[in-house]
Each structure stands twice: as C-alpha cells, then as structure tokens.
Image (cartoon, rainbow, N blue to C red; front, side, top):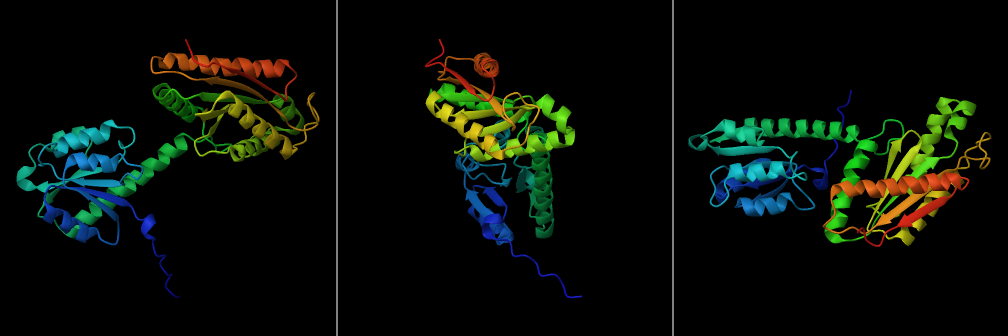
Amino acid sequence: MEPKEERVIREDERPKMLIVDDNKQNIEMLMELFHGEYRIAAARNATRALKVAFSDAPPDIILADIIMPGMDGYEFCAQIKEDLRTKNIPVIFVTAVSEVMDQNRGFALGAVDYITKPFHPPVVKARVKLHLNLKRKQDLLEKYAFIDALTEIPNRRRFDEVMLKEWNRACRSTYPLSLILIDIDHFKNYNDTYGHGQGDDCLRRVAVAMSRSLRRAGDFVARYGGEEFAVVLPDTPAPQALEAAKNILSAVDELNIAHKSSSVALHVTISLGIATITPDDSKSALELKDLIEAADKKLYEAKSLGRHTIACYSWLHMT
C-alpha cells in the first residue's frame, strides 16, 4: 500500500503565535523553534503585545515572559483574560526557573501552563500543541452552543448576545439599529397537513433563504423560537430595514413551498415586524427591551392585517 500523501498546510492556515519577551535573544530562540509551523508575531513589551492581541487578527496562542519592564506578564495575562475578544486565547508563561515565584497566581489569572528556561524543545512543542488542540475543541463547543441544531443558523442564545452587543455599539456610536421579527404564517396548519418531518424541512429552507437574502456581512439572522426568526441590522435606518424585509419576504415567496392549508396563499408565506431606533450613550440595556417589544408589536400588526406583509415603526431617538 502506497503511503498517503500529506496535505501541505498553507501559511494562512497555520496557527498564529504571539511571543512576548523583552529579551530579543529569547524571542529569536522561540521563533526559530516554531518556524514553519506557526505564523509568528513578536512584541518586546506587554503594551505592544496587547495591541497585537486586540487587533482584527488575534493570535491563537500566546507565549509570554513574566518579568518585563512596565507591565509584567501577570498583568498582561489578566488584561487578556478580562477582554471578551481574547479571553479564550491560551497564555503560556515561558520564563526562567528563578522567576517562577508564584505559579498559583498565574493559574488564577487564567494562564494555562508554565514552561521554564532552559527548556527542552520537544516538550515545549508538545505543550503548545496540546493547548492549541484544547482551544480548538473549546471553540467548537462554543460554536455549537450558539447554533440551532435544526436550521443550522444561530439560535436564540446567540441572538440575545448579538442584540446586546449591537445595542451597546449603537449607543456609543449613535447610529440606527433595526430589528426584524418574522413568523411563518399558519405554520401549525402546515405541520398538521404535511407532518413534522416536512415541517422541519420547511424551517430549514426558510432559514437558508433568509440568510442568503441579507446583503451585508454585519447583518444577522437567528431562529428566535419555533417558527419565528429574528434579523438584526446594525447601522440601518428604517427605509433600508424595510428594503431588507422586502428582500426576505421575496426570498421566502420564491421558495414556493406548497401550503394548501394556508388562508393567505397556496405557498408558505411570512409576516414581518420592523422596529428601528437611534439610541445614544445615555440609554441603558433595559431599553433594548423596548426595541424588541416594538418589533414584536409590529409583527402582531402584520398578522392582524392579513399576514404575508410588513409592518414597521421607527424612533428618530429614544427620549
């Protein structure tokens, strides 16, 4: 049997490593050790390292010295773990035996391991690989925790997280935030007529159509519950939100899924309620509920108007 040819890993597929050490020789030694296996960034102080970590291309793993001028490794690690963008990045302290003063402190701050110098290269490589594999598994678990198992789009838990994040961003930036709540018309009748298996297939197809109809990378769709969906549109005023809703409505119509027990049409249709707000930084997270409630009221209004339609409401500012 011929041996399987190993796939060459492209450079952009390699894990990204950040090395933080005020000693240039130590950085060069570690870069030489991991050369060809990782994309490596280096920083001679913790302040610079934080900028790299908080960038749009954060590292997958960090190797940090403890004793550094200015901000030491412990404080650096604490800041990494306190920020939502970087809290899951493994931090390994690489330092001299004489500098390991309090390992418990490092672990309490969120570091995953200590490697002491002088070190044995195969051991260092093995530990780094171990913690990267653990991170990948954790990332997968978190990813699937936020995905609806049936439709394979984000679930209500993820919606709550994204909605709060976009609300806070809108408050800081005072840009308009729009929310669309969507309901499949007479879906109970559909299940009763065609069975829950076809009902599940209908939900999946509708979810895909909605996702594909969104135009911008920042637009977000989730399964809100049952046959309900939610679309978050950051930096989107009411007229553009209405256009997005029309695109969603048309995308579902174009599926032309038969629905003979609907009083609206001979195919599956949806009703949509839109609410748009331009908040400011004086608004609290509690008022996010007002936006959701307004979209829900508009969804109810769309249903009361006969379904298969859109109802919308907008505030210029909340006062």
